[in-house]
Length: 316
Image (cartoon, rainbow, N blue to C red):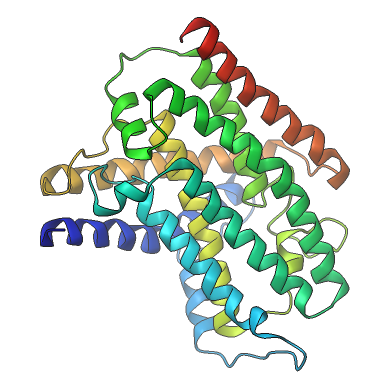
């Protein structure tokens, strides 16, 4: 690993850590504008994280080491995902580990530990949220895998950099398989990031919340890491969508600093558009009952399978 490649890898990880809270703030701001409400500051997520880091943590007496370690594992898993997802360049040192199956495994690892931590204290809300989280993850992960496998069939590899390089150099056209996969990926992203219609990130009502129910017992630095990890997860899913469906503008090497620096504004523009679309979807949708989630995610899975079949049968 050359020094230039190492610096490029650090740059991509640093951009992810810095832009993730900004993306979350942008989505909240767009959502407020669309609902004709007073919009919060773009810097509010940064202020919240900073405020939580300087507070003293309060931990329940019966908390096990899992409860204390879980925020660090979840944050570390999201950082690893941000390092291997090609957001600025496909030729970074961690590109060899950027396998689609490994990426889904990182998301699953974070989900398992946050669910275990939620059940560790023994509160009703934590157990409720953990069960709902695993319920949604059980349905969302197969759909996500089918979407990634569709892109893998098109490029002939399960490596994300190879997928990006292959799709970026194809002729500009509407591919039915990617169209079906794009709709399925959007539905999975809404569920995985605790967004409407599956979950509402702005509520604390016990009948509706999923993600918030699992983190009610956390405070201070532990809660700051979880909130930062949630923003990173949204950023990672956005970058995965960009890498598969809008891969144009991503640099191809780790030594071409001009291309890497040029990819940063393109990434920011794509994230801004994606954040606005996410806010628009949330504004136009209504929160569904938790028992309707299987129908929602089952539809996503069927669309992803249909995308694979269209590619296998029609080659498009």
